[in-house]
Image 1 (cartoon, rainbow over the protein chains, first blue to last red):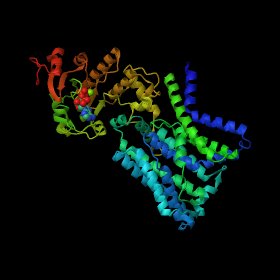
Image 2 (cartoon, protein in one colour):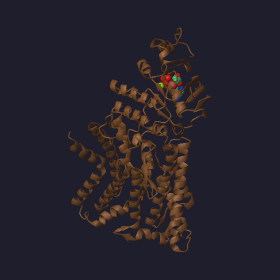
Image 3 (cartoon, rainbow over the protein chains, first blue to last red):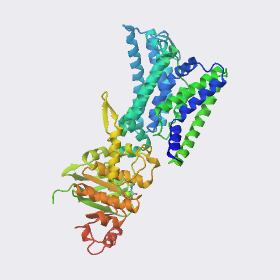
Image 4 (cartoon, each protein chain N blue to C red):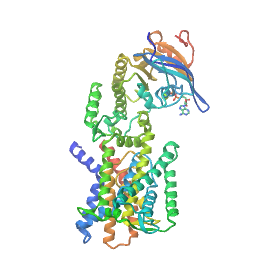
Length: 331
Length: 254
Ligand SMILES: Nc1ncnc2c1ncn2[C@@H]1O[C@H](COP(=O)(O)OP(=O)(O)O)[C@@H](O)[C@H]1O
Ligand SMILES: [Mg+2]
C-alpha cells in the first residue's frame, strides 16, 4: 500500500465518527421531509448540550482507564440543589440575591461544588482505598439519586430565577448560550487533553498505569483530579439541566447515563482506557442527537429511540474491533 | 577508591511468607558496571525494584552518595538520579515514540501561564537521541503498539542513555534484541559508565556479563553468593556460584 492511501485510510479511521455523522445527516436530509433546515441543525446542537457536557466528564475518566457511573445522579443532585435554592414555586425556596446576576455565579459554583465533592469522594475510594471504580460509582449512582429523592421529598421545584434562565433563552448566532457553554467545554477540554502534560498523562495512565508510575508521574493525584473533574462537569450538566427545565424534578435526567455512555463509545473512546479523543465524543453526542431528531420528525414513538441507541452502541463496539484489525494490517 | 555510589547493607524483602531477599550487601562505584547474575527467582528483580523505589525493603538500609537512602516511589528514585529499565517493558503503547521518551518529563512552554506540550522541541531531541544511537524507527509519531519488540526495547535503552542521572538499573534489557542491537546496547552501557554513571545490569547471558561488567555479583536464593572482579574469575566459576556448586576460588568475598 502506498503511503498516500495509507495516510488517507488512517485519517478516515481516526475521524470515523465524524464521517458517520456527516453520512447520517445527508441521508436524513434526503429522505426525511423537513430535515434539511438550519433550524433542525441548531436544534440538534441545542438538544444535546446537557448530554454533551456530561459525556466530557465520563470520557475523561474512561480514557484514564476507570469508570464513573455516577455522573447522571450527580447532575440530578446539582440541578436539585440549584432548583431548591433559586426556584420560586414547588419546593423552591426562591432565594433572591442582589444584584440579580449574582445568582448566576452562585448557582454555578454550587452545582460545580456539589459535583466536585462527590467526584472527590469517588476518586478517594477508587484511587486511595483501591476499590473498583465500577462498584464505587455504581453505589454513588444509587445513593446520590436517593439523596435527590430525600431532599426533594419526591416533589419538584419550578420557575427558576429569570437571571439564571437567561442562559437558556438568550441566543447567539441561532444557538442558546447553554449550547455555547457545551461547545466551549468541548474546546477547552479537547485542548487540555491534547496539548497539556495533564491530558497526556491521563491518556498514558489509561494505557499503562504501571509504566507511568515507574516514570515518576503522580498517578494517584492525576486520577483523583480526573474523578473530581468528572464530578464537577456532571455538576455543570446539572446546572444546564435545571436551566433547560426551568427547575428540577426528582427523576430529572434519568437515562442520561446510558446516552452518555453510548456517545462516548460511539465517539471512539475504548472502555479499555487510553484510547479516544473529545472531538470524537462530541461527534458521538451529535450523532445520537441527530438520530433522535430524525425519530421525532418521522413521528415514530419515542420508545424507538432506546432500541436504536442500544443498537448504535453495539455497532460502535463492533466498529471499534474492526478498526483495530485494520490498524494492525496497516502497521 | 572514593566512596561508593550506592551501598546495600543487609537488605531483606519478604513477600508474605516468602523470603525473596535474605540479606543483600554489596556496593556499586561511580562509573562501575556491575553485572547481577542469578538463577530465575533468585531475587534480582526484587532488588532492582527496591533500589528504584517500586518496593519497600522489609529491613536493611541503603546509602546513596554516602547518605541514608530509601526511595518511597519511583519518582523519588528518579529525582535522586536513578534511572531504571524494567524487565517487563514500561512503555505506553497507546501513545507515540516521542510521548514515551518524555513520559513524565515533557518539555512545555507557557501559553497564558498554562504549560503546553512543546511537541516540536521534544521531537527534535528524540530524533537526535535515536540517530546518535543508530536506532531506526520509521516515524516518531507512530504509536508504540505498532513497533516491534526490538524497537520498543531500543526506545527504553535510548531513554536511559539520554536522561543519564547517577545510577542506571537495567533488568534484562536485551531480551528482545538481535545480535547487532545487543552489541550496540553493550556499547551504550560502557559509554554511559565512562561518564561516571554507575550501572547495574541483570542478564542471563554469561558472555554479555563478561563483555560489559567490571564486577560480577551473583545472587542465589536471596543472598549474595559471589562478588568478584571480572578479570579475577571465569564463566565456569560464575556458573558454579549461580548453581551453588562451590569451587575453589569462586566463593563469597573478594
Ligand atoms: N509480587 C510478588 N509476590 C510474591 N512473591 C514474589 C513477587 N515477586 C517476586 N516474588 C518471588 O520472589 C522471588 C524472587 O523473584 P524475582 O526478584 O523476580 O527473581 P529474579 O528476577 O531473580 O528471577 C521468587 O521466588 C518470586 O517467586
Ligand atoms: Mg527477574
